[in-house]
Structure formats: C-alpha cells, structure tokens
Length: 357
Image (cartoon, rainbow, N blue to C red; front, side, top):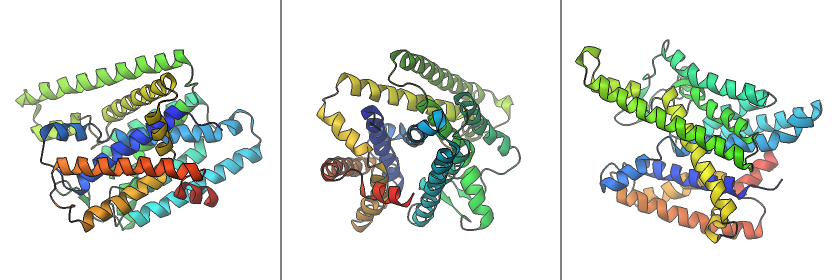
C-alpha cells in the first residue's frame, strides 16, 4: 500500500511533540524562558492525542480490504494480527514502566485489543463508539476516586504493580487511560475511512475541527472566569480549574474534543503541505522519520533519557536545556531515519514488530 506522505509527516511531528513533553517532564524543566515554557505547554496532551489518532488511521488502512470485501477468514487473520500487536505492546509497555512511568505503549495495547474487536463496525458506529468512550469517563468519575494513587506534586503513581492499581491506572486514571483515550483511536479509524485526498472532505473536516476547537476553548475559558469570580459556587480556584480545564489531566470531554480537533487541524495542514510541496526535501525527510516512530519512541526513552541521566541532566533543568535536548534528539532522529530507510524497508523495531505479529 502506498503511504500518504502527509500522514507520515504528521506522525513525525506528533512524535517530536511527545519528546518535547517527555523531556520536559523527565528533566523537571519548570523554570527558564517563559516563552519556551508556553511553547512546550502547547504540546501537553495534544501531541499524544495526534499520535493515537494517527495509529487509528493506520489501523483503518490495515483493515480496509477485509472490511470492504474480505472473507471471514481474512477478517479473522487481521483480528489475530491486531491481538498479537496488542500483546507485544503490553509486554514492551510493562517492561518500560519502571524506566518511564508516563509510557503510552501499555495503554496502546488495550486500544489495539479493542480495535481488534470493533474494526468491522460501520464508520457511523465507530464514531458513536468513540463518543461513548469519551463520555464514559465522567460517568466513571461519579463512582470511583480519580485521584487515588496519585501524588500530583511529584506526578508519580503508587500501587501500579498491584492488580487493583494496574486496572485502575490502565482503564481509568493513568496517563492515557482506556476510558476515554481509546476514543481517540476509534476516531482515528473513522477518520481513516474518509477519503482524505478529497478536497471537499478536507474542507468539511477543517470547518468542523476549527469550530469545535474555538467553541470548546472559548466556552470553558469563560466558564472558568465566571466560576472564579462567583464565591457562591462553593469551590476553590484549584477545584474550578480541575473541573473546567481543557488540559490532559483529567481527560474530561472538553479536553477530548479540543485535543481531537487540534489533532485533525495539524493533520490537515500536513496533508496540505505535502500536496503543495511534494518535492520539498524537509517534508520528505520528516515523512521518513514518521515511518520509524516506534523505534524512535523507544529510543527517546532508552537512548535519549539514558544519555541525559548519564550526563546528570535529569534533575531540575531549565526549559531551555530541555528544548535544546529535544532539538538535538529530533535532528539525530531525522538523520538516522533518512539513512536507515536508504538501506532497509522499515525501522529496526518496526521490522521486529511485523515479524512477531
């Protein structure tokens, strides 16, 4: 299947956004140039949302033939392949957790498992299921303690390796819990079913995404201001911010809608740039990088953070140092990807992943 350069381009940007967020978190980079702090904050919960949505688009491409006209046996083979990917992702993610608590791969495992069960649904039902995951989270919040296990000051989680703690973390109150984050993946599968090369469909997606993003962000900003000015509400400013935030924690519906909309906008920009500048060298290099995201995601933890730890740069660094480290890693990633794909068809971990599944 021919790859859409724009999607690989977007995948590289999503990866780099995640590296910005993860290096900042790992290096405790909370001080420094205010503009860079604001810049890094733009990617929190947004880059990872784009990453998951793009994974959903990838599943849509993978399952397209068997959904449109495949035999029962073909559907079974694809389903087994997705389940195998799920198991492998869970293994890698759990092995990663002691090194990097905020790892997303263990959550991906359950997204893929759910995708294996529902990928044959119609586009309309997939979109409905996505909305269902989004609104299931606040419903669960009525019955379970979202803050259980969390130390918000240290951003650390206790009790993960207990049965109860692991289930709670993976499905409800972890960094990227199945409820509601699987909604991003299912939305991505729905998005991948659309003809993204069609100009009219792109215009429609642009109009909807931009409208939703503006309405959600403006509405909840005004609600926070109104609630903060009204003492009769009976809540502290921190509680108001927590309930009415459009940030990643907690992943309430307003965050999910805002993050999904911004992800679609970034994807549409990438598709447009790739179509307008098909021979642009930088876009081609970034599309190569987007084909090695599994390898590079693992590398940014093992190699990137490993080097930073060896250099003594994981303790109370400035945002300036964090962004510089990210820039160095991204440049090396692009060079490595272009070089590697000149000699091989896929990345090292991508190749292993394909062989195993």
